[in-house]
Length: 405
Image (cartoon, rainbow, N blue to C red; front, side, top):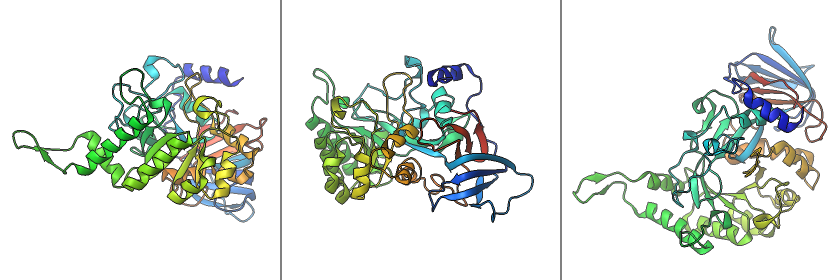
């Protein structure tokens, strides 16, 4: 069954979102890549009540009696998609399942992904089948400040079941994707930055409680509260910027306001490695196979290797696609990076532990370690080989997929 057949078949299935009920599981692998140390040959991962309680060689790791045992050639942590709009953007690509962008105003930081996230969207199930257990999703490009993102598991009947961080970052966008036509604002790059600075300065200047015309206390607006969280370092500003001039504009905002900045996309980051490293900024890099035109005409398959060599923390993402099936798969994107300068372990780290660190959830996901969530991906061969399949997925100790993808 090909990719699109599986995708559309899943849309007809009832109950494709999984409500996790932790099991007692032993995962065995000929190779276990923990991302917390060297690969373990003939290793095991023991999961008790949804949490990893042991990781090690099968020969020396005690296996509890009565635990379900599942096996695969290669075992990795559950994969982490560092930036997507899945769950807000649906596979039908019709008005009723497209909540990733509200165009009623250019600056809307008050919009929360968790209020629009649909964990039963078939794309969530589809990604889960490839071993992706955690996603950083939310409002996408098309507005200067499009809303707040969230970090969620790819299982759960409701957003509250799935969520890890309900308010993760504030998504902003620079360049043509967030420009407007005609006389509406912002119409230029300079106006984009001016509006962002205005929003930050307003939040910086406004008292905690102002007064209305009648002298009554007036609490700050939702917009102001969110931008204050950015100023306080409680929520990073996630800036989608591909061109070098837009990346530099974002870095200037970071320096001016002392905010926590994460670069998204960053097609021309390889031109600015010194500036990005000195600014201490993390990068959620564009999918390597994203079509190289327009803002991405200077994109490169090798940018991940360049960033790694420069010592800049980065992760890969599926990003946003305007056409069906509305998403890419980070497993495949990392595979391309592994064939273009990144070492195998470095590519896997970019969709596991390094992605988890950038999202601030490394205490729960991204590696196979005692005390972390029981999220595991199982493969029948090298995950980056085209002919390999994801043959099993475990989330919080629950087997949520056992159909080869």
